[in-house]
Length: 421
Image (cartoon, rainbow, N blue to C red):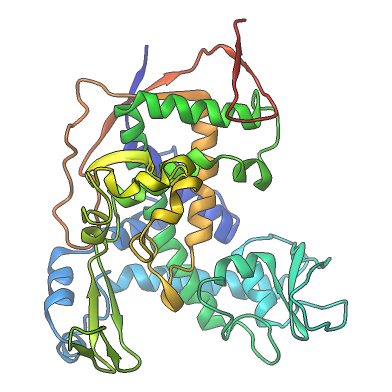
């Protein structure tokens, strides 16, 4: 027996609670009626911009948008709500320094105050050392004569260390903290929720992949009483492959726009991108191009499994296939053809956070429940008519409580022994 649920609503509530806890250290009580919750109402506005604003923002040049007062596809009231709330929280934290929240706001305040201390001399190497500050930062990466916390390194590893992390005379300003908080809310909540929705859908359609994932997770964390640490997560290649394949097949950001900072010649095409030109990169189209992913519309996690790398080009890009992304397959991926979080200096700052939350959520869910289709499950999915994001319009799935055979964990997580209880 299973319970039919609106899986979009479930994951929307869950992801909002996760992000607000990590960002602000407060709980939303997401399972209660949220219709009067101003945070949820304004967050919904950021995820679903008005079609008129989106159309204007897509079609009109910047000077016309400025004249019309359209700064962003998201309505101004929602932006102002989050900026005002974050500014108020930062001010309160600065006034009351006795509490340690160990969240993003605390990290931003400590960076603003240049409060990350080094307790060793520069050796010229990038060494890992421990720091013991009241801000909860446990590790630091030594760079020159200053330290960048491990959390900051994860958040900024793709962007380079710029203004915002203590490095010499640099620090994170309040405006930068406000901007990055908004990014976490805008990107973190919906990206986590929508990705989980697509993964649950594909696992329900592919019980063989779901069982393989369950066996891998169960083999690593046992009966659930073991703490799920980063080392355990890193031993789950199929979990990573499932997430990667879902983000490839169901690319949430359909395209990304970038401005050239210098002239660039496109090989021998005779085309030169001039400094200041805007370039639209079709992420969804790249992820579904058969030259890179054969059968691109098929869910196939095995595309990314180690033992299938030499076969990667021959897999259907229209099929969900997690094995594309397994470790032994990754060297067959064409560089820069898998870009769910963009690339380079403008790569999504919330990428590591999103991936970690996806893994932890799936681990906990897959141990307790099985995703199944019901008579009301749409096949194929009905998607929202939007050029802004690739999102399902609705999705009803069944959640079935697991009553499984006891799995004895072995030294090799992929080698599973079953014992009936």
